[in-house]
Amino acid sequence: MNPTRSSASSWQTVIRWVAIGCVVLGIGLRLWAIDHNILWHDEVLTAVSAAGHRLPVLQAREFANKLVTQPELVAYLGPKGQPWHTVFASVIGNPEHPPLYYLLTRFWMECFGSSALALRSLPTIFGLAVFPALYWVCWELTRSPLVGWVAMALVALSPFHVLYGREVREYSLWAALLLVLGALLLRALRLAGRAANWGDRVRAWWPYSLVLALGLYTSLLTVYVSVGQGLYVLWLDRGRLGWRVRSLILAGLAGGLLFLPWALVLLNHWEAARQLTAWMTAYEEPRIQVFRRLVIQVLRGFTDWVPVGAGWWGAGLFCAIALGVLIWLQRQFPLRVSGWVLTLTLVSTSLLVIPDLFDGGLRSISTRYWTPTYLGLQIALAILIAQSLTQGQTLRRSLAAIGASLLLTISLNGSWQLITATTNWAKGISVSLPAFAEQINAAANPLVIADGFGYRVGNTIALALRLRPNVPFYLVSDFRQVNPGDLQLLKTAIGQMTPPISDLYVLNLMPPFREAIEAELKGQIQPLGGDNMAWLDRLQLPSPIAAQKPMPLNSNLEQFKL
Image (cartoon, rainbow, N blue to C red; front, side, top):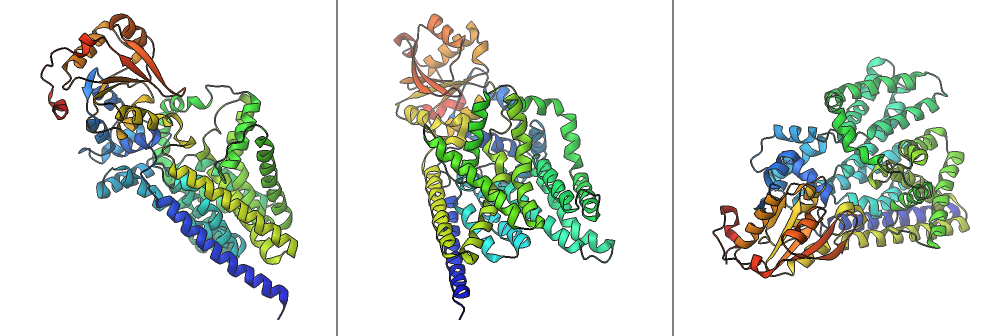
């Protein structure tokens, strides 16, 4: 027996069983205590839109200088009798987010309810669909089952994929669709290359057009991925308008035609989309900060670690290794393989990163926008690891085994840290809310004051989800536009509470409301901490205000009577 062949066969068996174990672990990570992490601002607004509630209507109805119960706020995560067509009306208010995921979520709500567990189970299913899609694309790319197994192991334990496989957002669906789209492109090129007539070519390309449209209806960033695929096919045709390029153009036009209805919606509401995405260019970061952010983003696909101090050298080394893997792939594999991986990894993200390097913008700050890059890097690493373990010399096999084990261990640790914490870096503007909820829930009879300006609507509902059902809210439209009459309404509401409130908390207290409380209500404000997007204060009012003789409550506060 050939010892080299026997050794390779042994490694193939080991790889397969290790990969199966990693996939099982990955499934467990995605399903474990799926409702443990905070349902944060973006998830809340996704659920609100899918339920068919328009944000301006919610703001006008509830944030209107009145007392609102916790169950009344939480109820906006469900349809509350809203008909299906209201989903479109709601999503049109944010036209930069196409409607497919919202419609699927609405269907899911109708079947299973709108609890955090129910809402997050849908993206978890899409996250699990990434595994067969990844195996398929690796098979189309390399015809090697081992590459597919290694790629699934890397993605199974990746903190990024675990995180977005548990979040009420469209990005686990998008990842699955991107992989299917890539596999269908490779399939179409393979089948069309030996097609006898136009009918055969149409049959080869129509699935690609359909999934391209589905990708566009999930995320507009699919446009950038399709640009990369166009460059890949142009690369295959050596820069000429060959049959591959012509076929892809026709298939892309067919997919674009299917997307035309939402493209028209986007054009008609272009100004709204521009305003809602203005944050990407509203700030100018120092270029060194942009570079640091890019390094952190590359790490996010494999670890939850954020470098500090000397740790930046290690982070830089990891990025250098990732770049080295791509260079190795380009030199060792034919263009059909290396070109596909390189364009997936580099093109779509570069279209976000390069403008940021010029103007210091924030286009590339959202980790979820790096989905194509992570998938490309993980496939490139899978090719390297699979080849090194089965075809390399003893030293190369040992280094590959050690490197793969270390990478999987780091990824597993990062994923575990993410799912066991109540909050994490991905919760953005809601990262401090669990600590606020713990503080408020410890009070005997608290009242929370919040306003509905901008992102604070979503944060208020996210906070309500972590509070006891008997914690009431007093909601105003905007802390920056209060008047004496608003303060009198607040004073009256506080005096009417039964039982009397024991603690009064204010979420995101801002001037002139802060000054008005201090001057008019003679209250003392105690900061309790937070971050630059969400902070909490405790308000201590003079005892006569809180000790007024209770008056009858309105109907929606009857549950607070003892």
